[in-house]
Each structure stands twice: as C-alpha cells, then as structure tokens.
Length: 252
Image (tube, rainbow, N blue to C red; front, side, top):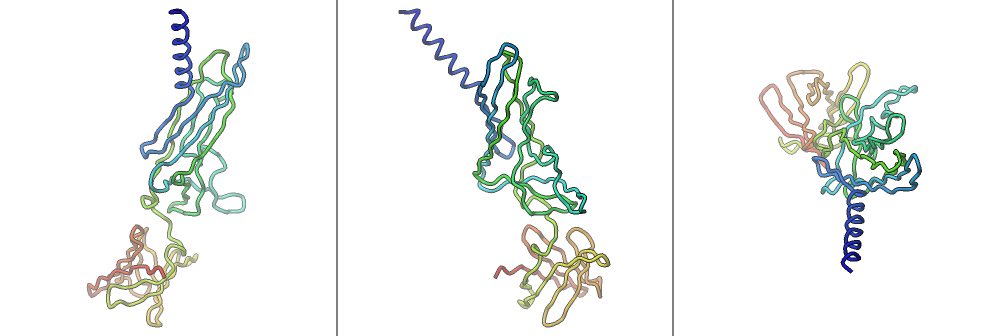
C-alpha cells in the first residue's frame, strides 16, 4: 500500500513538473507579458518534433508603441522593412533546435499610420489585445527545448515619441490667449520652402518657415517665433515687442 502511494505521489510530481516546464513567461520592463507553451508532437528515434505556442498581451491601461525604421521601395515610397526582425519588438528563439540558424519567432505588433521624425513609423501593442504566434521545430530525441527571449525595442506610450509634423497633426483652428483671437493654421511642404505653416487671421495670411524640429519663424520677419509643443498640441507665439501668447488647438 505504501509503495502504491509512493508511485502515485511521484507520478503527480512528475506531471506537475512537466506542466511547469511547458508553460513559461517573459515580462518586459513596461509590463508586456509573453507566455509560451510547448507541445510534443512526435517522439522519434533521432528527432523530436514540437509545437511552440506563443501569446503576447499588453495589460497596461493604454496602448504601447515602438518605432520601426522606414525604407524607400522601388516606387520611391516609404515603407517599413520587409525583414520581420526589423518590424518586431521581441524574438523568441529555440537555442537547441535543429534548424540551420536555429528556429525563432519575431513578435510583431500592429502597424499604425503615425510617422515620426527621421523616417520612422510606429507599431503598437493594443491594450488588452492578445497576439498569438506558432512555431514548429525539431530537437534531438529526448532533448528538452531551450527557449529564450530578447526584447529588441522599447515599448512606450505615444507621447514619448517625437511625432512627425503633418497636416493631420497641425491643420485646424487655434485660440490665442491674447485677446481670444481665432486663428486658422495649415501645414504645408514644398521643395522651395520645405516644411512651413500658413496662418490666416482676420483675413490676413502669414507664412511661417520651419527652422528646426519644433520652431518656426515668420517669412516676412524672422523676429516672430512659433514653438510647437506636441504633447500639449499648442504653439507658443512671441513677437519682437516681447508679446508672448499660447495658441491652443480647438477641437470642434
């Protein structure tokens, strides 16, 4: 009777140990959770075949983003790289697989249309969305697969990135803190002027030329300055006489 109990106890411990080994997780500094599960499909004389099931979830209270470099294709259009590794935020790899260069899975989020300065675009991990990936691989018979993970890119909230200036971001009506003046502002680009703004107020039109990432000066008088705060979506206006105003975008 004692032997039977001992056998049952050992069996339970072995099953528990197998379950613990077959389901593991990695957690990024930002809290993104990657879990994986191993299923043995074939126990051969020389090779064992496995299925690796990977799931990723972003449990944070907001979407998380990472930047991917853009490249020009044959049609001169800017697109993300076709190489999966360059579009991924992490990679799961089987270190002892029998593939030529080892087997692995690049983990890729959802492409957005949000452009950054310096020719990057954002990919995102949507809040509470589950991303699934499968990988089939082989190892030497009776060898335990060795799984590791590398986080390749920082995952951040959108406000932490230097978003590209474009018409969608800029165009609209702005209320000036000076005398509550309503201003129409539009983003433009040309070969001659580069990036510039067109301001319409009280029937008059002014052109503002871009000087650096966030600063514009008026075309007819460079002593007038506009500085854009992307996080607050507003401009700071200053004139030669020392007048300083805030132009806040109106969402009508």
